[in-house]
Amino acid sequence: MKHLSVRRRLFILIAALTVAAVFSVQVIVIRGAQKEISEEYNAKLISDAEILWSKIRENSVGGDEVTETEIDLRSLVAELPAEDQATILDYADTRAFRIWVSDRLISRSKNAPPESVPPAKVGFSDVLMGEIPWRIYALQSPSRDLVFEVRENLSGRDRLRREMLLGAAGPLIGLVTVLLAALFLSIDIGLSEMTRAVDTIDRRSEDDLSPIDIDSVPAELVPVFSALNGLFGKLERTIAQERDFVDNAAHELRTPLTVLRLQSQLAARAVSGPERQEAVSALEGGIARASAVVEQLLMLARFGTQDAPMESVNLFALAQTSIAVNRTLPVGKNISLALEGDANLMAMTNSKLAAILIGVLLDNAFKYTPAAGSVTVRVVQEETTPSIIVDDSGPGIPEDKREKVFERFYRLAGAITPGSGLGLAIAKQIAERLKIRISLANPPSGQGLRVILWFPETISA
Figure 1 (cartoon, helix red, strand yellow):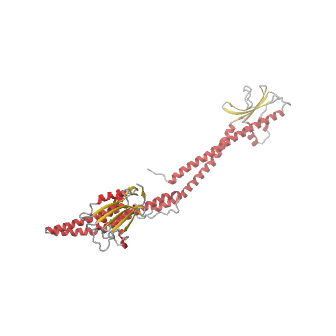
Figure 2 (cartoon, rainbow, N blue to C red):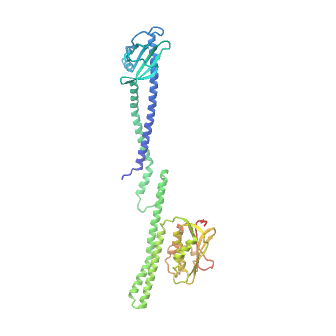
Figure 3 (tube, rainbow, N blue to C red):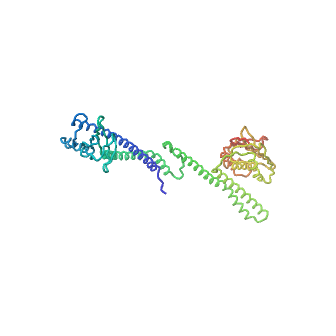
């Protein structure tokens, strides 16, 4: 399906409206002119009647008496120049008159109807002579029964109207042509900035996602190009996240895979039962660590593009659900797990991502808390802000390192607990998506680590 360009659509629409407007104005003007022509001809008809009346009375018997005579309008122009004769005779062909006295026709012009046609009524009237329309103006003497009527052949008016229409057609067509040319040129100039911007985008390489310069773009197109810039930004972030994922995966999987290869070789060489069992156990542990790394990497990549619609969530129920899902993680460590706080505290967040965030913090707490330690989750109103606090009794994090641990793959020097350095980085990324402020502190006991989640808004229960 072929799509019309913006330029062509605008031109067709505006051109149609322009032509319609021009012709509508022209029709109004012509109708007004035709009305003026009719009024002018009617006035001329009255004037002709009065002039002829005067001329006939000058050549007639005094008073109101009129002698029987025949008047030939052509005889009045016999001595005029030929050009003037042609003009007046053409005019005379469209005029006729008759004079009646006591319903008796006593005088008429040669082109007037005979006496068998009754006199016209006083004033204006329209009649048909054959198939030709005539307009009549009749005068009546105030002192005697004398009627003087002047007739006009309306073909003269029709001819003048046709001449006027034909005369206006040429300038009108020229005007419309000039307007359409100016319109096309104006649209072309007006859309040139958009055309240049589109050409600039078309010439870009596939990895150029820099914003489009919208300073010279027309105001109507600024929202379009602003939306494109927003899309370019999202694509750039998505591509960067995918690139980071590939880099992270290559970085983090290299060591576990190497270890797995060595452990598999050791397991293959082991001959005795205890030695083989030890090698197999080490291999299983390596596989478990590699699986954990892969799961964390996939989680990190998924959160980069996942939508997070906000809703009113009960934080206590949210923490309770997350604890129920993750309570089996500290297998064999006999860690006590507790949930405390306000059971009615509400906040605006995304329940699915927030549950994963709490699960990541619990996994991190279980991992670093020693055997017979404790992990406590509190749901409280912290400084007028709804918060979830996770306290553990692990080794804690020095204050000067608390910002660094949110970086990917960062691990404290001398750490003996196995890990990939992605746990808190994932938590930080989820918190940023949910507009949750995350901070690290010391628990009240002074030992271990406290992680505080500050949610953005409080909703009454």
